Amino acid sequence: MRALVTGGAGFIGSHLCEFLLARGGEVVCMDNLLTGSVENIAHLTDPRFTFVKHDVTNYIYVAGPLDYVLHFASPASPVDYAQLPIQTLKVGALGTHKALGLAKEKRAKFLLASTSEVYGDPLVHPQREEYWGNVNPVGPRGVYDEAKRFAEAMTMAYHRFHGLDTRIARIFNTYGPRMRIGDGRAIPTLVTQALRGERLTVHGDGSQTRSFCYISDLVDGIWRLMQAPVSEPVNLGNPKEMTVLELAEKIVALAGSRSTVTFTALPVDDPKVRQPDVTRARTLLGWEPRVGLDEGLARTLDWFRAKLGAP
View 1 (cartoon, rainbow, N blue to C red):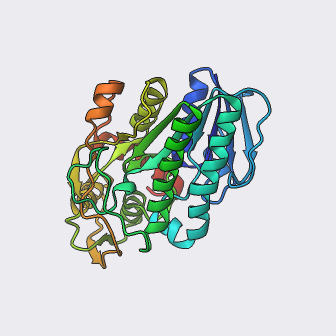
View 2: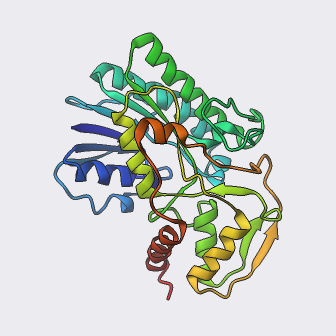
């Protein structure tokens, strides 16, 4: 097995590279390090692992055969795509086109890392794959939402027109070690604040809901999806829903922190609810999240403590 992972030095990408190596595969990790980091892959010293610094919006060259092309390259947090709107659009459009072209050339299976953000601020709850979404294409989040929606459309076009063997994973909120400090997402922000004894910033009144999937469960789902004969999108996420305020209170308790919560303005187009319907993943992949939130947060807190040098 030989795989290319674009965005392989990112949070999810690095765990995926690690997983594929553990299964005996050879991995080419490609990343321009815009939001990824070599620290995430520094421990991967296996001779079957190769890192290539490259921007996938440009022509992608990989010598030799490939069995899989897994396209994970993209800024992935609200802070990222607010600061990098053009790059976010380009990697979703041009990067996906280049990655699909490589998969076609190599006759490799292709997997697109899509997102729950294709559902926008949903009017259907929980979100199932048949739902087309409620996205504001000209809002500040539109650069990410529409880039991923376009990437899905292009992936299906390559599947239908060229007969390419494709998969689409709609990834819901995922967390765990190697998330970037200060990337703006809920868990790294709240964990960092709790460990530093700072006030935890919760948007709005904290009643908006999210569902959090631990990284090892997600990677397992991605692998199962690659092996299953399904070209339609598949939700991958933990269906256990909770409010952001409940999450903040849980992190404070698990961290043994004295931090209190402060409320800030709700960002534009911030989804009010987010919960995956994972019936398709259960039925077609035999997949179910296994790591509970307390266990996953404990592992994440340990990693952030070491990273921050916190007691």
